Image (tube, rainbow, N blue to C red; front, side):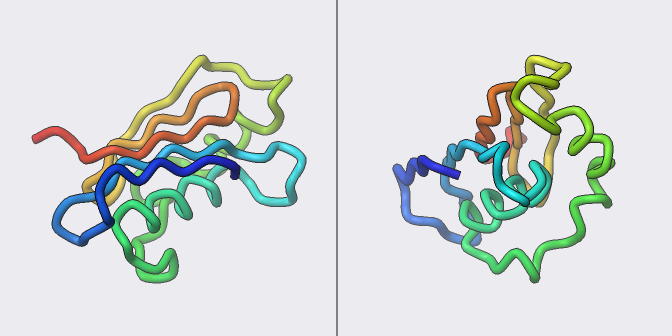
Length: 100
């Protein structure tokens, strides 16, 4: 992960907008990057979040974004713990507050 944008300090009531870039050369999966970004956005330990697999098939997400060259979709978006998560083919993971 490389960049992080913190316009507002993270709070449990209102997630911060976070944007990170997944490192396709790391040993970590894109789903790990997603959970880490969301935990930063909501200021909660990743271990205290519900499993990502309760929201989206993490294995399928990892398969879709296995490498920067193998990426299939332009992007995938879903809601996870009150956050809108968008994963883009270039490895960008954007986390924003989910719309009501």
